[in-house]
Image 1 (spheres, rainbow, N blue to C red):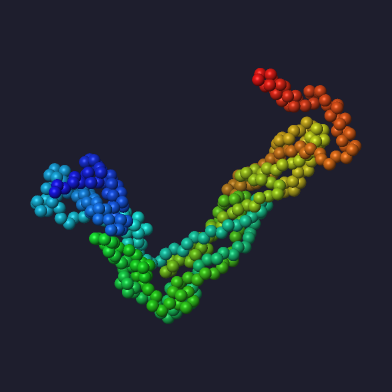
Image 2: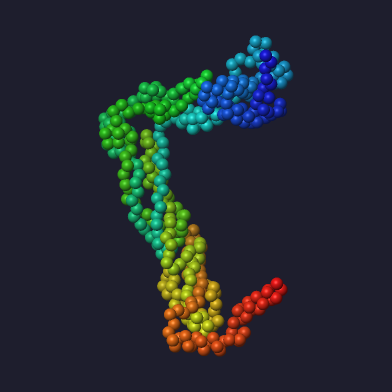
Amino acid sequence: MAKRDYYEILGVERGASEAELKKAYRRLAMKHHPDRNPDDKSAEDKFKEANAAYEILSDASKRAAYDQYGHAGVDPQMGGGGGGGNGNFSDIFGDVFSDFFGGARGGSRGGAQRGSDLRYTLELDLEEAVRGTTVTIRVPTLVNCKPCDGSGAKKGTSPVTCTTCGGIGQVRMQQGFFSVQQTCPRCHGSGKMIADPCTSCHGQGRVEEHKTLSVKVPAGVDTGDRIRLTGEGEAGSMGGPTGDLYVVVNVREHAIFQRDGKHLYCEVPISIVDAALGGELEVPTLDGRVKLKIPDGTQTGKMFRLRGKGVAPVRGGGPGDLMCRVAVETPVNLDKRQRELLEELRSSLLGNVSNSPKASGWFEGVKRFFGDV
């Protein structure tokens, strides 16, 4: 029975690059691997066929012989140069195995490992974030077990060579017709095992504790800013270095101010009388009250800027501004006399375009619109 063309098996052109060959083989290997297709003889045959094609085409000399003489140039039974070379199999298998088993070939060798970093969310009031503060936090973490000094072995004893892997940290297992290397499940790659575990940490070398830490928060921080406390994370295993603690700032909503970067915003309600006649108001800032002059004829939405009354950013630069937006408040719960006064005011304003230029212009626009319709 005639053999299929190797390029056709992999689905590539004859001039395909090494990267294209590797990509094509990897796709086929993932699709037809026996572990993903149990009891599927057709998939197993396709997997073996792809292996054979890639073995030849991934080797420059074998590929040259195949391109010139076809299967006769690489078939040992025909005097060709086949037989046992693996080309770049180790590389491509490593990629495939990483998908099957969740990591690189054989995993990482054991030994000292750095402890995990920790995250703590710190809730602050706006005033604390703007001015800076020092807070005390309590964080659960893993620390080195004191009785065994982090070794996991009972005091007076030491870890011994792992009997499963013989101290190598890796074991070989059979997968179909080939074998792969994995991290030893007993010693987790360290090559050592605890024969007599510490009774305090049960052989883990670390125990959970709560740390109480003092955190200095610089002035000007905002939501999302992080404060790094080096070495305050989880203890490393097997004598590895300790991780870090990241304190993430979250600024609570404020009853008066909204923050946008270095600027603050607030809404200032004023009476219809102050809006019409003008006046002077006291408005709050983070540094105390200041007077704000309201000119006559002020409308809702008018924005007043108080320079330098915002936030000095944590990364430097001058302070921002406080933006005060005016909201004209309509009076409610009027008594008889107040209503009479407003009726008099309405009568005196009626028909006077100069007193309400925006309203007059708007009504004129409405008339023109409906006239056009």
